[in-house]
Length: 329
Image (cartoon, rainbow, N blue to C red; front, side, top):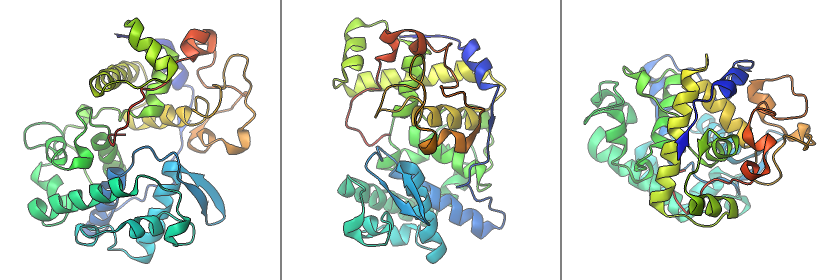
């Protein structure tokens, strides 16, 4: 795989502003910081493939992560100590279903992979209880606020099954939320990388940020055929490097570029329909979540329309993210 520097793509990113994330609550007192850090720790731990999750909360329809974080915030308001290791060490499938349902009835939840997510929460809770007194803030303190190194945040998180991804998607995502909420101040924030999931992979491959030189792998990606875990890691590592290059050429930081690309991947370059670029004019403005997070005077096409390879070349538009069953993202 070959990484392009992405100068033109970065210049197009610099034309827009990222709006404040309405799910972020800025914490100031220590107890609020502790509550926010533990919320994000447990929520990000089970944030993999949330395609099936959808419903109506407070009169508005949400899907995937948008639904997950709002449902969690609803429970946090009702029970401030719900997202704690002591509570979640014995969490059940019905607890999880009830949490992520419109009305609190387990049978009404659309969330899948319940046993897997329950096991992740129980395992993460056990690690916190055994090593950090049940508090993710103690993990942060033990790392002395550093991401990297033998005793850093990344290494400590990897002891949890949910955070064992070698490409560290969830670990970087958790760090982003913990920093933005004010719970953590990371000493080596320059080491922060983009959290690479299937949406950002899709955008990177279709845009030409990453060029796949292996013909067999390129064919499997376009045909949506399964890949090996090793191939998946290589693709995601290449995408992460490409995002580093994009950041070097952009005025936006990793937090903002992640928001732009992730939102682009779940709207303009989504998996349920053809990419909204080239000859495909947007017919989904009413459902667009990109415009909720990014100030963009939308002309009915993707922000990268015309400079993204996929908007000009059907061969690139045919790319998909890797196909692999994983709990990493």
